[in-house]
Length: 221
Image 1 (cartoon, one colour):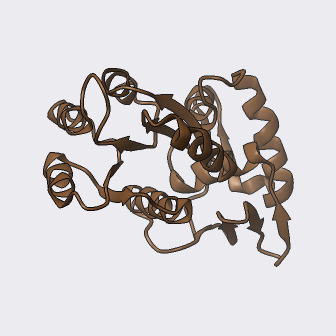
Image 2 (cartoon, rainbow, N blue to C red):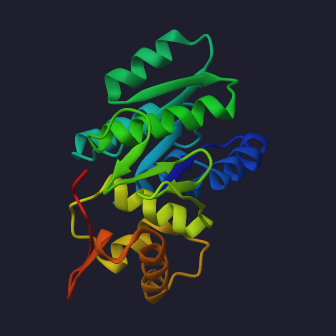
């Protein structure tokens, strides 16, 4: 999953970006509101973490502009812990959730996971489908035979995206956009390699190839 982090606190960014990447997110950074608004309109992100106090254009204005153009990107706003009015303004502008600073990264990760599940209409804990269960905290998958397999970073990001979008036709270019960040060396042909590796773990029937279109993950339980 690809995440937009809009934050100008360098110390926070240094630690938070690493934590988000370790949790399996491809992360792009915007250090001001103008860049954040532009990137958020690129339709390549699954979620945004948006600081209210951005320079050049504040987070509330960015969020309002997104919503005014029917941009439904899921957004968690970061506010000062005691600034209740910022939380109200954020919700009124179209925020999906908020978190007050300072915060524990574990809470942010839990809120991101919950919001992603809700936005894909798959609320409630673990992602399951086709007899398998994905553990997002441990980045592992348990298959129908009860075996648990640890996933590489790319395998995890790809499988999570498949499970959150099961039943949809996903092109290789779309998968590439949502699995890698701007700093990664993107090659859509690599997606074929990782799909092949997931099939070896999960079974060939889990991921269907649609010739000329892309891939579909089985939409059954």
